[in-house]
Image 1 (cartoon, protein in one colour):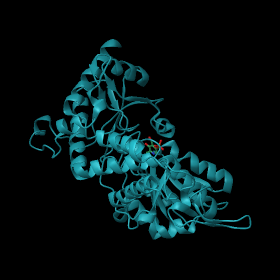
Image 2 (cartoon, rainbow, N blue to C red; image 1 turned 90 degrees about the vertical axis):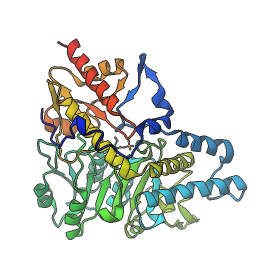
Image 3 (cartoon, protein in one colour; image 1 turned 30 degrees about the horizontal axis):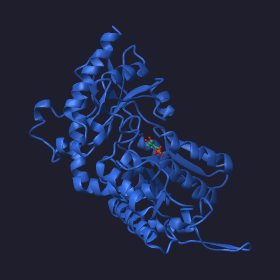
Image 4 (spheres, helix red, strand yellow; image 1 turned 180 degrees about the horizontal axis):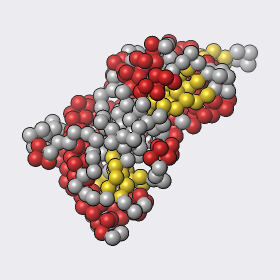
Amino acid sequence: MTTGRQSIATSDWKETAPRLDVSEVRKDFPILKQTVHGKPLVYLDNAATTQKPQVVIDAIHRYYSTENSNIHRGVHYLSEQATRDYEDARKKVQHFINAPKEREIVFVRSTTEAINLIAQSYGRHFLKKGDEIVVSAMEHHSNIVPWQMLCEQTGAKLQVIPIDQDGELLLEEFERLLNARTRLVSVAHVSNALGTVNPVKDMIREAHKREIPVLVDGAQAAPHMKIDVQELGCDFYAFSGHKLFGPTGIGVLYGKASLLEAMPPYQGGGDMISLVTFEKTHYNVLPYKFEAGTPNIAGGIGLGAAIDYLNGLGMEAVEAYENQLLSYALESMSTLSGVQLIGTPKQRAGVISFNLDGIHAHDVGTILDQEGVAIRAGHHCAMPVMQRFGVPATARASFAFYNTKDEVDTLVRAIHKVQEVFQ
Ligand SMILES: Cc1ncc(COP(=O)(O)O)c(C=O)c1O
């Protein structure tokens, strides 16, 4: 089996030891202490959602036990505290992704909602029949279906960048797709089904040469690497709190102020207005124009705590450690026969998708679960990727900085067990 990336030999592990003290880090995550089916939990389903450190759980608990109240409109003490903490979280997000302005950070429910916001606000306002939107063949359904809905509404057309057998984008095809009708490119930074890290910075440069804005789906990138939206040059960047060690129900849309200003609101309601009469309503300033109704206050505060925690670890240390862990996992899996990797990209983050000869991915997932190993089996909300590789499903092990080399060894032993059962 080829791993498609340079491996770090097992013996190199110590010499290239990361700056992260993983055994200490693991103590911060109460859920990781659990046993499952009598075995220590090995949580390798981080691409679906990540576990939460105690500081995030505490921040949510503190909010509900000491300052629960509605924000922005209150004049009383609790409301002021809650507003301050929620808006502090926005500043933390701004600095975390190096956005130039605080008002460029829109809190949403999730990556899915961020992409739908762009499709329904930017897309419906600026796109018309015959215009084109470019996505890739490795997108999550969240970065396909909103555009298909927009195409139905406007008569625009979806164009798809193909991928090769390694699971990498065909960049010449991408450039060929960009033309005078292209109005938007929307592409994953990291593929949730293959782990491919796409060269989004280069792609953004190419699109910008033709004055085409770019939305980056960062759901699988933000948890694994330092994100700098100014360095990338993207127009929009989306990610989910729950994949970033924060709570569910909170996500982030970064957008360049000039674009967000030009876009109409996505939803109407409280907080997104400055004046309402039956004759005319005036919308609020950014980012509130896009935040109708009572937001997920606890979620925002919890996300702020997750970002503080990650800053404490340092995203560079997280990335360096995870790269070593992934190399170790790929090398360890290469010692097994009967394993096919789905996707062998040169740049990979977080994810290893695989199938075992003659064994359905769901059976792999079920038997691994009996060994305490939590992976995901299925199409990973990326059915076009499955079609591209001619498989109905894959087993997917996905990693975070709290995973260990020992857990990789447990995964490999458990895969052996699956193969024995099906011999
Ligand atoms: C690449 C990618 N985009 C979008 C999403 C959707 O994220 P959410 O369900 O948090 O909106 C996911 C979730 O797995 C993803 O992996």
